Image 1 (cartoon, one colour):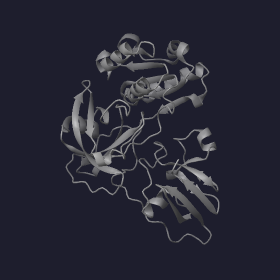
Image 2 (cartoon, one colour):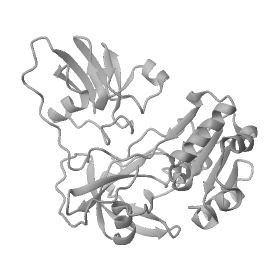
Image 3 (cartoon, helix red, strand yellow):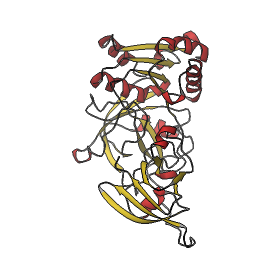
Image 4 (cartoon, one colour):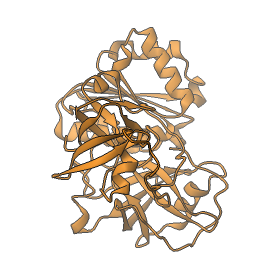
Length: 362
């Protein structure tokens, strides 16, 4: 997710209506490079269950702003749930970016910060499988979480392509060198430094990755980098379904400040479906107006449905259609085969049959 420049300066006291928002303390601030800082969080014992996460997921941080109350920014977790005691994210400064510079310059150990629970669908489902990981710049953050997790509990082999401007800008460079030294038969790091080789291009990347291209691909980084990697995958005839991307994009709505609008009451007769929804071990029967998205209906009824971006990108609100027909307005976070298996995004889903059964308890 990207930073933004003109959000004002902060200090406004939070007024958080999102039930998945929690205020935690910063345990440690680590300078990784001249431009990147890792924030380590101290999660209270009573919230550890709410902050369970998978490698590749992200946290959404609330940055105070006098102009808007707050701005929300998403940062991937660089920690591993399998070998790190605390959750951590790495923030790279964006030129003139208010949020990233505030986080890097202002936060210190002991400071409170409000965050949403972990979210996102990026990352391997099977930590034992072989994987090809491609990271550009700060895209190494979720990739580092995946590498550490696979080495800690998996058995597969990992090839990592890591592209940077120069050696000094490589986040976790020393840590990756140490992991490769400790796991010589399982982790291979292919470094691409623009200062030495110029910008990566599809032909050169395809040639570099040709001996390693058969596993699932996991790609994170700036648009230019991911475009080159996707072109390389196409040149190597890798099926698109095997190339998984984590995209950096700005949030249109602020999940800390945005509140769901009440359901419209002037819908015509017959313009609603009967909704049966299973969530958090309970079943609810609701009226679902056919012009309202599923997430809005649930939040309006006080049901604690998971969400972050409300823009089809993060996949946090994924659920399954057990009965009935639905359609999605947008579907960026889901693959064709996942949709064929009945998965849908609550933030984008509208009903198309008279009765629909939805389950969040996957």
